[in-house]
Structures are given as C-alpha cells and as structure tokens.
Length: 355
Image (cartoon, rainbow, N blue to C red):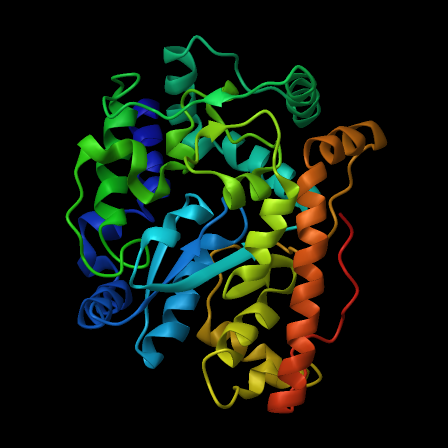
C-alpha cells in the first residue's frame, strides 16, 4: 500500500498532475489551453524557467498577462540560447532568486517525500549516493566544484531505471508539457525526445547528476550560458551570463514577485492595475485574488545558515551572486521608470536582498 501511495504522490507532483490526465478536474486550465490555441499564430515570448525561481507560478501568471495583448508563451527549463533560433519568439522572460535561498530550496525540493521515490530509483540505477543533510550535501558539492567537476549528464531517451515510478513520471510529464504554458499551443510530444523535452533541465532529467538532484553550482548563470541544460562546464562565463540577462526582454525577482508581475504588465499595457501601487496595502492585497501563487513560502525571509555552510554556498554560487546583483540593479532601474511613466510605485523597498 505504501508503494502505491508513493507512486500516486509522484503522479500528483510530476504533472501538476492529474489535470493532464483528467482535464475536467481543472476547468480554468482547460480554458487557458483553449485560449492559447487560439493565440497560436501570435508572437511568442520565451520564459527561461530556472528551476526553483518561482517559475511554475510565473509561467501561469505571465500567460495571463501576455494573452490579452495577443502573445503566447513558451516556458522551458532549458537554456537562454534556445530562443535565439526561434523566429517567432520576440524575447526572453527571466526570473532570478537570491542564491542562498535557491540552494536551500533545491535541496528541500529534492528531499520532498513526494518525489523521493523517483530520485531513489534514479540513484540506484546510477549506483549513486543517497541524499544526506543539507550541510553534507553542500560540503560534498563544494568538494566537487574544487575538484573541477563537470560533464555532459543529458539522459537517454530510454528509461534509466525501468521502475514503475519512472514510467509514470515520464508519461504524466509528457502529457503536461504538451499544453500551455510549456507549449504555446497543444503540441503532441514523443518520449523519444525525452532528453530535450521542456528544455531538458527539469528535476526529472537529473538522473545522472550526483544524488539525482539539482546541482547548486551556479545554477542561474549556467542556464544563461548553456547550449544543453545538462551539459555542465567546469566554470561559468560571468560576462556572458550578465550580458544575456541585460539583453533579455524582462527580468523579474522572486523576492519582489508582485512588483515583477507589475513590471511585466508595464512593458505591455498603457495603464497598471491599482494593486501595483505598493504604497496602498489594501489594493496590494487584491493581487493574490487574481494571481494565486503555487509557492506559498515567504520568499522575503532570509534563511539562517551556519557560517561554514554559508561560506560553502557562497563559493558554489559565486557567479550567480554577480548575476543576481546586476539583475537587481536592472530591476530597480526599470521599476523607477514605471513610476515615472505610469505614476505608480511598484517597488517600495529598493534595497537588494542579502545574497
């Protein structure tokens, strides 16, 4: 019984889940997919979903913002470079997160009991090590980085473990990725293309990575500079990462999520909703009625980490810290431009969150 409960929980987590198999469970999603199909001929934006940057919520919310203006969305957990060869994509949308918070979120997600069965199957197939404490995880990744760890860990199209959990996860994910916001309109996908589906960099593609879990080595700058999501270089190109961030159409910050959605709206609309005025707490509260957030954690809270653990995390995310600082600078500058143009202050606290 416990085994079947674990498989069922994996299905729930893997798909957002049963709505991919039984769409009548989510009328709103069904209507959203229909709208996207009608918008299939419109210009598209590419949301480069960096894992654990609030991308699941942002993908849905960005689609709500874009569709009234005739745009569709292509959300992928892949590389920034992907959209450069897509003639119908007008630009890239990016969301960034405080590096220390991201590392902790990566670990907690991988430890979540709902996906532990999948990870355990992958780890066993790769003769890997089980996931220990956060301190141990960070320490061992720090040692790997110092040793120059790198390589191409792209999975094969063929299932890696042959386990029931892996087969179920693949089936549910492929069904989910066929519809918005992952595809601009309904697109039939094949398991033979598994290594590249949804950008090829989801948690479900990490079977060959140590612990079958995300790598905390500069994950944000890696996605800005890679050609293959699971091809990890020994070092990240900070200059290229920052250049790509600056040239993107939109940059948002998870720690300022509401302001980020308002900034995206400001880039497309001639006026802004009242909830974008950060000095009006009553109006701001109406934001959550329109944009329900899948991530209920308080992203503004700085996680406490022992000093030795913080030092390791900072070493692992040295390039990401540079990118995050530059992304915050751009974000603040554009928020000020919105206030000048629209007469609404969307960002009341311009102090950059701690790393």
